[in-house]
Image 1 (tube, one colour):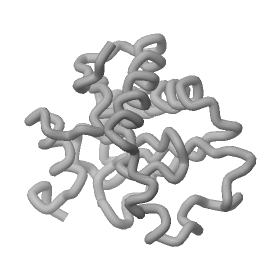
Image 2 (cartoon, rainbow, N blue to C red):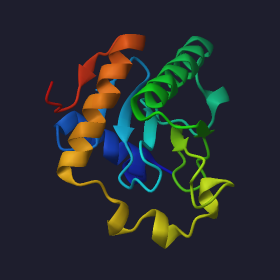
Image 3 (cartoon, one colour):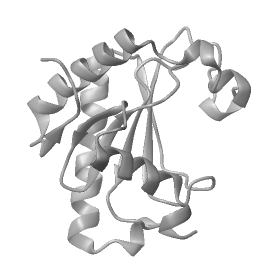
Image 4 (tube, rainbow, N blue to C red):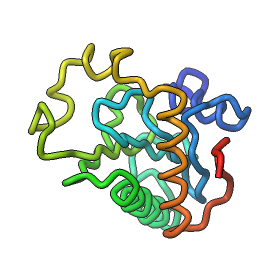
Amino acid sequence: MSVDNCLICKRMKMIEEGTNPYFVAELNTGYVVIGDHQLFKGYTLFLCKHHKTELHFLDEDYKAEFLVEMSKVAEAVYHAFEPDKLNYELLGNGDAHLHWHIFPRRDNDAVHGPVWWVDRDVMSSDEVKPSKEELESMKAKLYKELGKLTPILRKGNIPV
């Protein structure tokens, strides 16, 4: 898939243009965004700045920093949203651009297996889209926790 047709690259372009409402923070190797749909409250993504499809295509130092930053993002998600467990996924089958899915999981989740067992229509329904107020609150909580763990290059439009 070319950069021009990549959904992740398009989302990052929106961040650069200041039009991605889900953008939380820019780190050295990627962008932190709240997921568009929140069936799993606190669902967050970490988007690699480089259009690569596999971890082994990254330069060794960059790869190491990307993985450390991902773990810091996950830790911030954990502290911000207080789940019982986190699920980490780096798939790329649908969008072939390195991006981590970080899913806060709770003991009372309707599905106890992989999140992808949930019907796609349920996962992406309008009912689980955060309201503007919910989104701003989630972004602020996550930004606050990120700031405790890692240097932030730039923040999204987050009231402090």
